[in-house]
Structure formats: structure tokens, C-alpha cells
Image: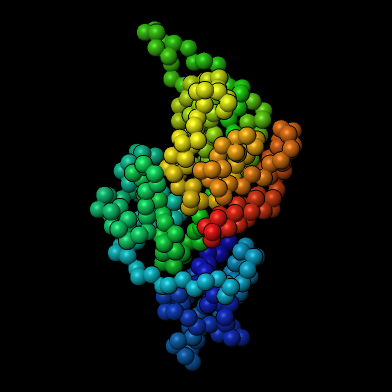
Length: 321
């Protein structure tokens, strides 16, 4: 698969019998990537290579539209070295998080993370922001644009999947010698029913685990790693999660800047939709039909992409209002 930015795709698409011209930064990136070679007769133009032709055709097939149909993006100035690296690093992560010391999975694994002055700088530049009450930084649309232009990464909105929880759960973990409850289970392991497992398997095929949340009737939108004890609550109970808390959780996830698919019943979807108006709910019918659709989604990449295309269209339609 070729990594071609929209600017590069537009330049290649506007070729004149294989002769390509464009912004110097765009052309320099295309040369480095082997898409074009300098035209000996004119320093401002280039010849498209076989790799360039193949990359352009692949770009059209993936995006379903010609590059010149896209609105032009302004060429963004290059950030200083470490700030540039921070934005490009975030663009390479499914969750688009700019890793800092608070990103414990990265920090304790000894992977690349960035200090507070760098994080403040990319936030001040408008390339990263916080969601809700979170202190973590994630790329903004401008940050993704920068990564496409300056990092050659075809990064788009995050793809979030929310699944319904399930009635069947692991047993209570018991008590220790001091009478205290033992630790609970990670949310991703708590629910044991066949229906929930079918939803989770489809979610795993649709997106990265860091972008999956479980809609718990008691706890709201929970990360797969969050420890939970078994509970017996439905969304109709007095103890159930409230719409106000769901809205708070959705804000903390940055659902306004993500394509979102929900896998579950319409009662849960109705609770989510006020907070996530562009929510795509591809499952219909009863639980049996839901499991069948989830199985098809696991096996058919084209169906998964069709679901994501529908989710993207809902996001763009809501944003245009």
C-alpha cells in the first residue's frame, strides 16, 4: 500500500501526459517517495513514475473520488523538530493521542513520549487538544492535516466503536482474608454472553482495541481495561447511567471528532444518540440477526468499509448543519 497525501494525489491527478508540477513541498515529498523524478528539461516539473501511477490509482479506489474534487488544503509550515515528531507520532497511533508522561502504556514500555513544553507547543499551534475533562492531547483536524502534508501519513478521523454490555457476566471475584472484595475483571473480559461476544468480535475487526468502548448500563462508556465488578443493572433501573453522564463520557472521548459505530440494541442507541447525534447503528432485527450481521462484518472487509463510509457520511452531514 502506498502512502499518498491528498496534496500529492491532486498533483499526480493533474499531470499532463505524465509531467507533474505543484507546490515545492508537495513535489519534494513525491520525489522522496519515488512517485516522481525531476524532469531534466525543467527544474519545476517532474515525470510520474510507475509507482506514482499505481499510487494514484490505489488512492482513487480507496477514497472513491478524484483528488481534484477535494477542497484545497493550505500548505502548513513545518514545526520545529521535536514538535513535528510529536504530531507525526500521534498520527501513527489509532487513538491519535500525543504521548506524554501520563500515557502510562507508552511511558512504562520505554516507547517515545514527549515532555510538557512540547505538548503545550503543539496545543498552542492548534494541532492537538484535550477532550472533556481529560488532560491527554489528541490530534485536531489541523493536526491531521499537518501529518498528511509534512509526515506523509494518510490519517483521518478516529474510528470509534461502542458495543452494548451484556447480562451474563463472570462470577463475583470473592473476598480476601481481610474481608475486602477482590479486584474485579477488565471490562473487556467481564461479559460472557454469546450476544456480547459476537458484538466484541465484530468491534475487534472494525477498529483498534484502544478505540472500543462498552456501553455499561451502570458505568456508561468504559474502556476495555477498566476493572469492573459484576453488577445487575439495566438501563431502565434507578441506578442506571444517566443521559447527562453519557454526554460527559462522550465529550471525554471526543466523539464530535470521530466516526462512531454502535453495535447493540436500539434502546441503548436511543440513550447514546443525544450525546452522539452522528451515531451509526448498522444492526437491525433481533439478537439473532445482530449476531449474523456481526459474523458477516468479521468475515467481509467490504461490509466493514461500507459501515465506516456510512458513519463518515453521518458525521459530515451533522457537521454541515
